Amino acid sequence: MDKIREIFGFLSDSKSKGQEFDLTVLIPTFNEGENIRRMVLAIDEIFARSGIRGHILIIDDESGDGTIAEVKSILPSFRNVSLIVRHDNHGLSPSLYEGISFSPTDLVQCIDCDFSHPPELIPEFYRYLKDENIDIVIGSRYIRGGGSVDWPLIRRILSYGAAMLGRIIIPVVHDSGSGFFAINRRILAGATLTPRGFRMGFEILGKGNWHTVREIPFIFRNRDAGKSKLKPFIIVQFLIQTAGILHYNFLLRASGNVKMAWKQHFFN
View 1 (cartoon, helix red, strand yellow):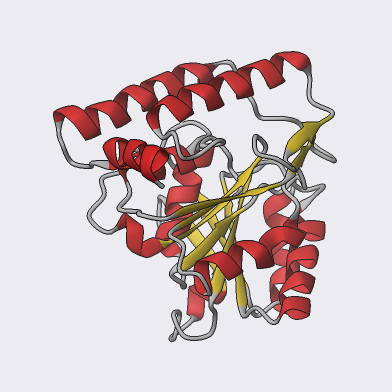
View 2 (spheres, rainbow, N blue to C red):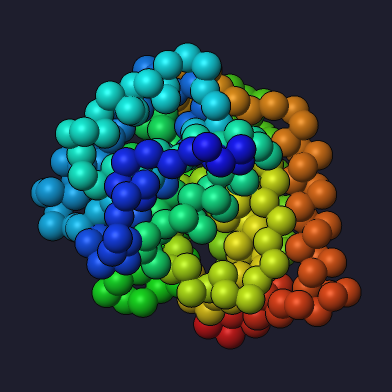
């Protein structure tokens, strides 16, 4: 057994990983035993209804509530589902980064397991990636038609404040901290990412080799079941991440994304 991870399902035995599917949906999990089966069933039904050849990749951080056993119990019924159990460097952004790296497709969608992100929007993300060749598609709470419900006031304030800070860095995106996003993996070629905290999309916006971005509105709904994993320390992680992106762009000059985003903001 790999000391860092274990792989089950499609990815564990596939000989043609890049040929069967067009889109991979990443579901990071930690103690999501109450939600994971419903989410897999919902996404698989959306694949069938929309004609998407989709793969579902669950990335788990050693859940102790039965999530892993629940996923293993459904693997025999789903050819298009894989599970990675991570034993090191736990966290949402590291999980997403590893999932993106192991994805059998170039088009990758990230979604939370708790139904705070509506899976029925997956075909819209996919259409922008595939048919319009957009580099990054972001589900936004802060454009017309977007929003959030059942959120405590303090969380609304923190989220909106972080979004405003993100717009100072990448002004063409209203909700850079959204965890509901999709990318074409080509934009990560040559980029040096430092995944930390909850804002993997912001890291990619700051350092990835993208040129086109599209936001689509969605209503964020507080989790249906389980416990929130929001911790105060993520605020510190976000500030460190912001400093890292500025350092990457202006001191290392490894990316020109901040300047590019400001040019797009004024001239597009």
